[in-house]
Length: 391
Ligand code: NAD
Ligand code: MG
Image 1 (cartoon, rainbow, N blue to C red):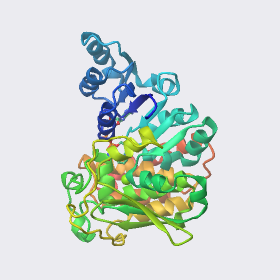
Image 2 (cartoon, rainbow, N blue to C red):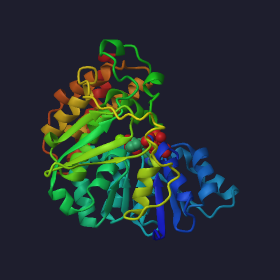
Image 3 (cartoon, protein in one colour):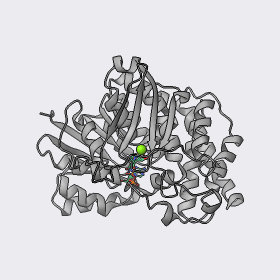
Image 4 (tube, rainbow, N blue to C red):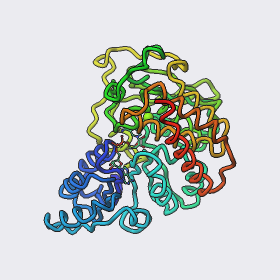
């Protein structure tokens, strides 16, 4: 039986947060919600507190604190309200032994690092923290004795196929699969006028708006290449990407003896979350088994189109450049996606703005968190100022 766990869900009101809480609620008594944290949606956080009765609730947006505190009191809950300032200490403290890191963007880095340093079981969905500070985060996890279970479906698949050091020693290459997003098969020219609503209508996965746009540009796969490099210590030239429109094969691992292992399943993040919560055991997640015939009886694969979706190549370039380059790529992408979602930047200008920012801030050594934070801030400043020129 899975051991009892006290779980902090960071990004609780989001897509991954909701899936995590769904799995947790299927195992009452063993899986307990200790802490819920959200960005600014107090009403949604309060509703989750009424349902899951955590010991702590954190709202990052200070303006939301009085409403959270008063709402918890009115609901008669013992849950303590906090602002975002308390988050890192709570994550590192005794209240939880397991942390679901599902805040979106670089905003998730401090709490993810705190969980790693404090030796927690870290269910890592916040891929941007690995892209921004992969070496530091992996070192913090090693030194703190944290167990990282990747929650990105591709990396969770690879994790399942590479259970121990023996398997890793015989690894030849990783193949990340990609759905291709909503614009698969379209030429670059035909993408000039696509709208945010079209970009976030993902054909296979239901996700938050930022990662949905990243999937449409293929930047999501680029971030995942960098993520895989850090998680599994594999250089970029041994990581390949294959478009697989059915999204049933979640990634593949090739060994030196010619074997290839893959993990398959329906596209539902609750499987990866259940793996993270119970590993090495298996628990019910609410996801049905895979019926390949009912899913159409076909598994198709094709190469990614780097002309229509240049973001993937930009991410490979940033990984090869190393140092601060992935942090700059990530920050410029966050600015570009946010501007696209607000109607201030065209879809095709997303890679242009990122490329422009990467050329303006060439890779520098990135040994410290401070150097990476400076690169992140500098890239945000440059990209924000450059938007008008690309709109
Ligand atoms: P989402 O937009 O649905 O949710 C984001 C969550 O983060 C919300 O709860 C929001 O309140 C919270 N948040 C934002 N800023 C915050 C801050 N400063 N402090 C505290 N909380 C904050 O996003 P999502 O789709 O759930 O994605 C979350 C992360 O998981 C992303 O890094 C994404 O790349 C990764 N991921 C998601 C999926 C998926 O299927 N949704 C799959 C793989 C990886
Ligand atoms: Mg993924």
